[in-house]
Amino acid sequence: MYSCKQIENGFEYITVTNEAASAKIALQGAHLFEYQAKGKESYIWLSEESDFQEGRAIRGGIPLCWPRFGNRDASLPQHGFARTAKFSLLDIVEISPTLTQVRFGLKETPKSLELWPFAFELEVVFEIGKQLSIAMHTKNCSQKQMMLTQALHTYFRVDDISKVKISGLEDIGFIDTLDNTTKKESEPIVIDKEIDRVYLGTKEKHIVLEDGSKKLSIDAKGSDSCIVWNPWIEKCAKMSAMQHEAYREFVCIESANAFDDARYLAPGEVHSLKVLYKEV
Image 1: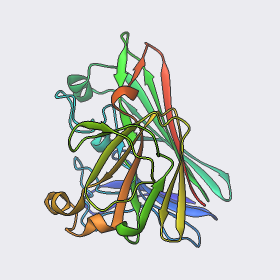
Image 2 (image 1 turned 135 degrees about the horizontal axis):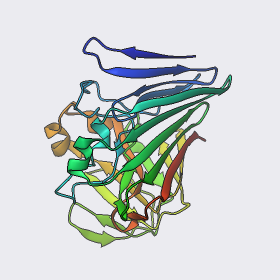
Image 3 (image 1 turned 30 degrees about the vertical axis):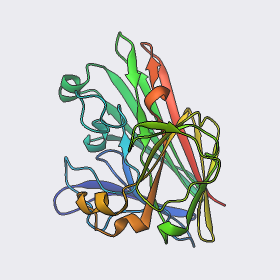
Image 4 (image 1 turned 45 degrees about the horizontal axis):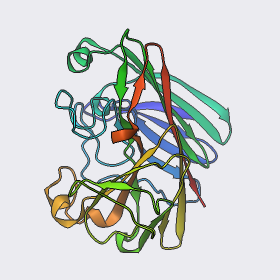
């Protein structure tokens, strides 16, 4: 079952419910902001102060950073323009009683061409069931090479950030963007301060987020980079649409094509970034 809804200010979103799970996805940004498997706690975090307004990115859920990750391109907004762009709902297919597929599309507009001079087709596909999968398919429809960086900036809900452990990235080099140095660690990640790392060389790595007795696996394809981020105390207090203590409640683990994992698409070429989230 599915329906199209909007809040009083006109902000539109899609609701999906089947025998295995439910979800809510905004048309702005093709932004999933709720997902819950039946009989399970939700592992997607959404800020209690998040904005649901046109032109303002939702704080939490799964923002799509596209066609840039980060703020290293002065001609584009931080994390690109897809987060606040209005997507078209292409179709919703109830594949089975326990699995629903939702497809969104975005194409260039006069406004996007002012920011980024490329014709493109971006298709975002959600499969909502016992597991959650997301795919971003980018096609270069222009007549010149396109450089693409992107990320699924997923906010994972945790009970206690001090008990979180992230495994699967051991002995992989990462850029610590807090001091712009390259490092490597041999132990699983624990978080007891601000963290902002871009791991490079993560292709086909099986990442596991542990939060006390709960475990979630993260498996990406079409990606060779991964970001781990938590703003911690001082930065969290300064961030918009976020309570001061919210850093205790989430960690971002982002499947990406970032930094040296940028993709260069020839005219007509398609690149797909896919991720599967599964409770284990």
